[in-house]
Length: 527
Ligand code: GLC
Image (cartoon, rainbow, N blue to C red):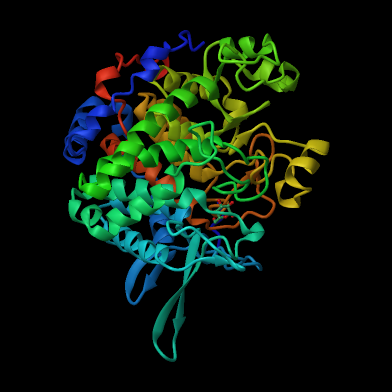
């Protein structure tokens, strides 16, 4: 293909945090309420003039992005069912980039929904639901019934004129990693489809209801857990290689929370549904408490951890996870602004991963896992640490990178994840749509505007790469695919949301109104 030339001041009070009013959900169906809410959101997010400015003269990249997105569409028996990960003919190694990845399709799906083209999304949801029903094995081991594929591929036989599908549930994936995020994204997308089209008939089918329940059974079953967070292996989400994100990674916890809330709004209150609704309500209650308290880091909290005593036994322990203050990396002390905060990467016994992860923090805002104060603090941090977290190309997947000995130990000497590259501090344009959504939700569209300007100065010229390398994200990634679909779709979604902020309703869940404090506009709103 031709490439064209060109301080959080407040510690939220525990009772406030704990007061998640979910009990009502046990009594009445949520969906109708949710549908009505989208109108409330429409009036709540009024359109500042800065949005309108661009809507008259669409950036030339927009038309090209649509063209590229349409080129990536995959058909099964004549019906569009998804988009391939990358349409990069120049690349020698296709690997699995010619497949439809569940997580990669999400921004494509949102772009189609926002453009009033829901059919491809419906087909995708139904096709992946069918795949969920397959018997899945890795060698001789049978996987859980509810597991959704990481990706699938349509094979066209031009002679017999037949289409068949092959799917990967981790059994072919590099490293045999489990796609834990796929099921969560599927539920989140089903809600987005329902919300955007108003078509309740899809989510209410017995097949979809069963699909939701099967996914939930995988993560709501009782075991040996002492925490409400979901225990995972390394590489089970967007970061699909060993990167020290095993345990309780923020990305999965935020998606888990959002999927639980989305499922709650769609599950029928029949006998089978009710059982799950009750479990969800309890889990959300515990999960939000755990995350908002133990994963949250701001200046005050950092100072507290710095002064922690260790080896405390019993219920009265302050340092519940026995984190050793010596394990706090030096960079955090300089990085943490007086105003601002974020959800850290991971929390488990004697292990706090202090790294910043963009996806998890944005999804925490969108799902209202973050309290309004916490959401504001995350945006404050982004503004304060723009150079580190955004640099010249939005958005760092995580910060900082790991190097030298630590890189050897943590990644297993992974040459693709060297410092400031790929998953190890690389910059991923796809994350722009989540940042934009978070900006709109928190009333700070000017931050998104700034990020979009950066993208528009390069992405098209560089042929829509998958990721960028370097401390500032200045270099096209060493092994980055070109024409990476989610980089393209992410840009379109960001543009459409900024032009019409009411789109946010399909991918955002409001804080329960009962506990919602008055929204404080940041001083940067008018910048
Ligand atoms: C890489 C990414 C993964 C993505 C896939 C397809 O493996 O790490 O997140 O889904 O490529 O684009």
